Length: 307
Image (cartoon, rainbow, N blue to C red; front, side):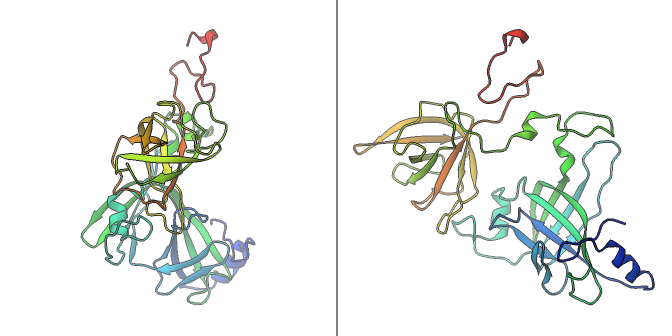
């Protein structure tokens, strides 16, 4: 029996087992958190017919959702789980936060988002507080497919960070990319540079920005951000909050009599950002060196290894 956590955070496993011992039927539901709790775009869904409140996590809203079975494998191979979700059809608009979930799926919005799933145990229908829930599955969305009237999310277990065979009793991160936080200062920076989007000159593949932090108005050295990432911030009027793209080139560009930073992306954004969109620049992910040693970012040659 997995540990059951009540709505106030205490361990209710023993109380639940004692309660369920003399019963033939038990009210159960499944809770799905797609995204992180601190993410304003996170989805709290349940297959129950009415909202379920598990206070330590949040309120989960009813949704047409079907869960497949967990595919278990031997060793450290990744387990996976398919979730079929049928949200209401909505209008496609140029705002990633409020557009239809079907458009979000087509744009890759759900890729690599964390998913946590719990089983809720209810002494009375709708009561997720008394006994609470136990963990069922956790992972990241590896694939997202839109079908007629549904979105199929393939969730890979958190063990997908392992890319090498290791003994089953020694679980560790063996891939330096798995340890990349996604917000690393570019070469020469000690802080993450922030920018306001300058609409003039911007397009879905070329973003013009005015640095606001840490050195307002300054221009980055040519290609210092190459192969890094441009990530849009969340905001009340942001249309691309959370969206990101890999940087192919960064240069200085002069518009009118003012200088700005211009970033060229490898792949086009779904639309041109607006003046309300802001973004930051992150350095590239660390390298997996064949010689087996990595010295932080940016990479520093190690003469003793001959690299």
